[in-house]
Amino acid sequence: MPANPLRRRTSHTRRPSRAALALGATAALTALAALPASAATALNAASGPTVVASGLDNPRQLAVTASGDVYVAEAGRGGAGPCHAGPEGESCFGTTGAVTVAPRHGTQHRIVTGLPSMAAPDGSGAIGPSDVEPVGSGQALVLIGLGANPGLRDTLPAAGRKLATLQLVGPGNSSKTLSDLGAFEARTNPIHDPDSNPVSIAKDGNGFMIADAGGNTVVRTDRLGKSSTVAVFDDQLATAPPFLGLPPGTKMPAQAVPTAAAKGPDGAWYVSQLTGFPFEPGLAKIYRVVPGHAPTVYASGLTNVTSLAWSPSGHLYAVQIADGGLLASEGLPMGSLLRITPGASSHTAVAGPLPAPYGVAISGSSAYVSTCAVCPGGGRVMRIPLS
Image 1 (cartoon, rainbow, N blue to C red):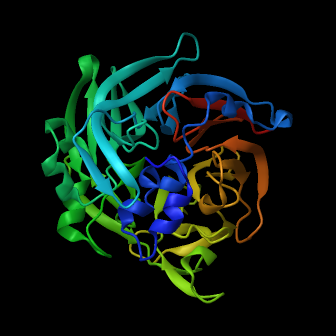
Image 2: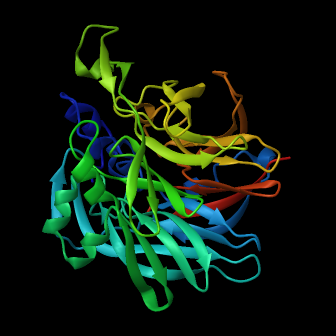
Image 3: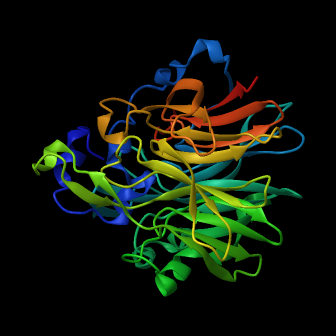
């Protein structure tokens, strides 16, 4: 992965593929990820966060059980290859993806290892395990991303077939494919070119709601692997950045890149948006989605949102991975945890600046946020008081 973040800026003379737009493949993040783990201490002291887990490889979404155990998906650090050249640089395959649990009483440890991972040669900015949902009896559901045309999997070793799938994992690293989201995207592909990067999972009755950042969709899948498209998110217009050399004020299409779906107190689904290149600050939204109806805007004025969670009190919280926008970052992107004001374009910062935060889960009066989400070995989970 490029050491110079300007490489991304000079590479986008044409509209990038969705592989470039999905977070795990974003060089605006991966090129910055090699900063020391000590950057993860750059927190707002007034927010009173504490470290729950550390030493994580590119941590993404997480979950907290009723007993207070924290599970976090680690996208891994890639491996020796094969490697593929993409719009964001070289990405190499390995089996370094994992799931870590930080028990409420005990020591953090990896309960699953050996899952597929694609990353820069230095291990930064990986795509791999993107979300986890513990289901008891030593088992967990693990969602695994891809960020490319599903056909790429055919060029990888056998473990690569698990990319863009939902896996049921158990003791001894056993796994079973419950749903192939990549195959579903290749078959249905409702918008743009085929590209799948499932990044978030939420329970929905006897099934699961999945945000596919590559497909620009929310997909529902059941335990038998039957999938259906719930929502499709269209492009929007963004202001072209100056380095593209276009006349000032020129507008260009930016893909939606949905990143998480969370069920609200009203039974509707709320979907966060990263927005694709050029990652314009303030362009991201949170959508309200009712199956069978077009998405509507619930909140606006946000920047590069990666995760959502509802609190027991009925407040919606969101993570911005880069408060100033991904292209504005000249070091590790700094973001925040926000409390969302419905219908508004201004929201309340709860904690920040946080180094490259990504996932959020809420238990009681605490939020758990993964940070340094593009760092091999430097990721953490922070517990942040909400009151």
